[in-house]
Image (cartoon, rainbow, N blue to C red; front, side, top):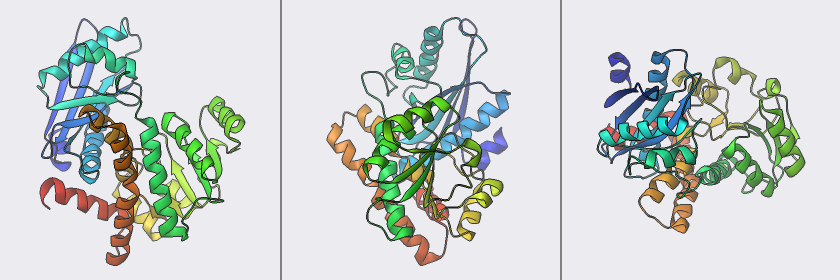
Length: 340
């Protein structure tokens, strides 16, 4: 664990257990130079505790980079609750987790993530004020989708020479809360939208409501398109999937899309423009962080719309210096976080 922490320059990893509720949780804090760590809470089954710790560390690092390039006075953190096979009382479990957060005295602020809901955040809020994404705070998904739309427009400018998305063929993978909201925005922009999801019901709903074209999950990477938009879980871009891609660019909402840093170089070598995930998908973080600070909704939306300009700058620097956008984004974030 300590080797992994040193490798990712982690600040702290906290392990919590509560016998009464069965809670087993990890809170990873990557960097608090800019402010308290903020990041979502995942509630998922893991084969081993080591896998859960590794996931928390990897995601916390991404949150630090995301906050830095979004211009937020926040650090990066992430929580993982290991979901047991049977949960006698879900509300009690999340209240117990709220007490764990409170014990860190404001060092970590939690929010919704995979497997958790605003109702879970309400339970946490019974025990600590260091929580956002409650039912009162609202759903961050539309703001994540808006930021990704701004990023896709930037990608279209940089790679396709287009100022609009009318007729641009887009392959969207994953129709969760963010993916579906983004699909609605892309259809409104006039994009030629293909969609895929492991849940056939979600695909049917999108076809019926939005008039999009369905694609089988095992045919996503080979589907010819202008822009591939991954919006599911991370780790989808490795040497195998990248070599199957038939697109000009990748720009999606999923966290940690690249399985490793070599994947960014392979995309670059194939001439596929990559929008760094923690830059393009920062809209949700902006929403939860600024809502927690009491910023007005209109001002938050304006901040989210700046994501496109940030990517314009990264792409321009990438061309000027002959380095991949992923490398440029990492160096920009590290300069803010460490003075590197």
